[in-house]
Length: 327
Image (tube, rainbow, N blue to C red; front, top):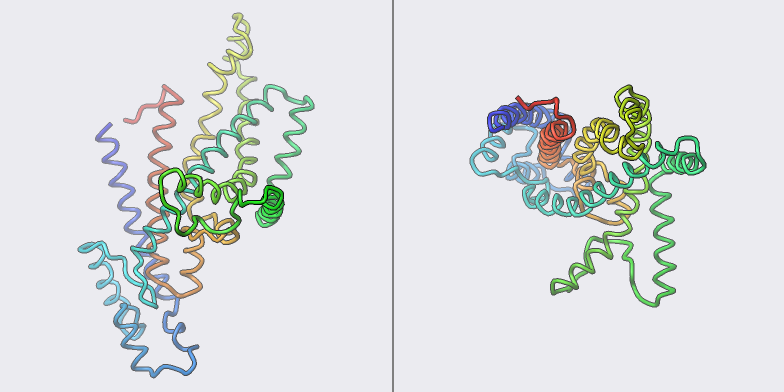
């Protein structure tokens, strides 16, 4: 187990290093931090712009290899991922925004997976019945409806509930309120901010898992070993739980393990609509503001989460299929 973990970790670490350095050269070649200063009125003297960019190691008049050496030295020796063109620390931004996204994405992904798998199993064992067809129609609608439409509908509904209640039950913007102290008041305030963006992620994301789980379970239910179990007298529910469900969960578990990293940087629309300063919004902001080191750090963060998802996926496969060994 330890040897497996060490081998996988070293392999993924090498991939992360290569990918991160490639992104550095691409971002340095394609983004223009100097453009952030050229549009200022009154215009700044060129020597002032150069000295400012030198201070942040972003001057395009300096060789890209010199900038890379300065940046990689800071990362390796001091874990300093650099600064934005306006002097913001990338370390501080990543630390704050990763925690913000974690609060939103992990809970929503967990609920989305449970709901998707549960409804997929329910629909599969009732194939072609009314409930199965209703779930298929609902899931197809959830797949095609855009995130902004769902968010707008939930915001209008939440405002109506707030007005009817005469107090704020659901917050429609932000991730927390200012001036809240104490354990339970902070928990309640956080839940009031979490409910709407979490519902948007769940409503727009559960359908893929539900359709995949239904399809896989239907294939497994028609397998010879499941029919043999039924022929030996096993009730259908027991045969599904003991033999069919575990096998059908393997592709779903792999899909979910790799979906978590994508969710961190992919919840751009939801974070933008509800004003959550998470990783998805940060990734878009770094590109629009020519923040080279922000783009590189976000790419490294995504690569690290993908590695975690891949290793987690391997462990899930071993748990679900005893024939697989980590060695």
